[in-house]
Image (cartoon, rainbow, N blue to C red):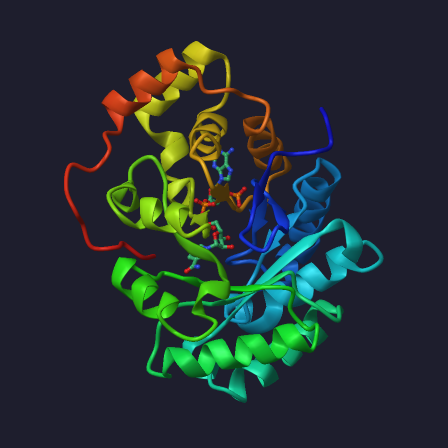
Length: 281
Ligand SMILES: NC(=O)c1ccc[n+]([C@@H]2O[C@H](COP(=O)([O-])OP(=O)(O)OC[C@H]3O[C@@H](n4cnc5c(N)ncnc54)[C@H](OP(=O)(O)O)[C@@H]3O)[C@@H](O)[C@H]2O)c1
């Protein structure tokens, strides 16, 4: 398999891999640690060099797992972490980022995201992100779980347009963002990171998807992820600890969703026909 995956270009001109590795529920139990580390290492070896983590996951434990994985190979990886809303104040976000960097064993993040919107004014969070960017501790920043109205408010702030990504729930059975959030992000050059792209493991068991994937000679998870990758400006970050699952994800970058299968997917998992509230996990 070729090592280089498709990339998405951010407004800053930086590129990020379109397929990465999620880490939610990693770093919670020491007995799972070796398996989690092996899965992330395999993913990087296969070219999935984007890692998505957060201070929340395993209460810092996931960042520690990632730190072990990227030790001596930091330069291969596009590293994303997230700050808790309650930590996202002018000073709090800087301190939280420094704690994350320590756990990750690195001096910078490629992207730092506000995990979801909380009570701290957005302007404060943006100011903190810009301080971190100026000092080189982060290369860029973004948000997560922001709906269209949140995005409009953000972009109206000084430096708000520096927002590089919005990470939201998006998969075949949850396509609400296609109505207005996804087009809005595209218009403003903001990449969308699709989280839970396998519907937390439920999608690969879906009967219609299984049938379509089997007809195409691939795994259901591979088809679900290939469909996400086919959406312009969208990045997928599936989580897998089973090595076979990591390989299924990697195969998605090799599968072109042709017009025929795209039509069948559209029939089985229709696009929204009106606005819906942004769903979150
Ligand atoms: N920003 C946010 O608010 C937010 C919210 C949720 C998630 N996220 C990010 O998005 C990442 C992915 O989302 P997620 O972890 O919620 O769910 P997901 O990636 O949709 O699904 C993960 C589940 O699917 C299973 N799986 C993976 N590949 C499979 C395959 N080929 N066949 C069958 N099952 C498969 C995994 O099992 P194994 O582990 O056993 O392989 C795991 O149980 C997270 O890890 C996190 O980094 C962000």
